[in-house]
Image 1 (cartoon, rainbow, N blue to C red):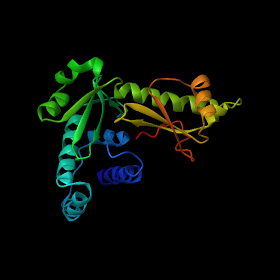
Image 2 (cartoon, rainbow, N blue to C red):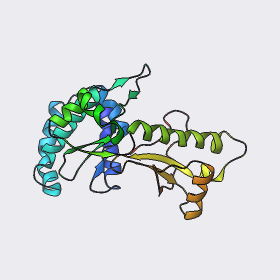
Image 3 (cartoon, rainbow, N blue to C red):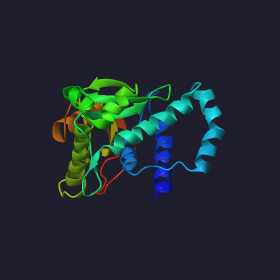
Length: 229
């Protein structure tokens, strides 16, 4: 089970790593798996050692070591998050996400309205005391997640289950959380000003939203609605 989880994590990183900026958001759907400690086996450590030099040559000296340390700190942080009975994570009010910067180091994002909570939370205080870089943003990760999932719920209701299909809802192919930008990406099949304006007017509007084109549907089910990056 753990090997499968790690493989999925690596797959998401490989697929989306080439599509975002140099300051890449850690793929937040993968962070829920940090509640189950990831065991880095001897084979994986050997593989890491074999490719570290190549990665450092491309990204900069020390990038691999910094990223390994960042992931270890991230696991410690998420180990401190409570979970519901169904296993989903209850993100603290202060937590707005994390990402890996150009040097491979972890950056913690803190909701500005809950600064004190970050210092009072064991995991948050641990990262800050460890010297992890942090910056303040407007929206918490829980707020971003709730909005992202609400949009996909609306899509399901108005573009899949409804007899009266909303063209603007059906134009949505997925959603994604960009933690580094503290925003939600709404992926659209047909991408133009009219479809964006129609979405904002008839489906959902929020200062959290940004838009991108994606020409295939990420998810149509009523389960894990949104694809979060």
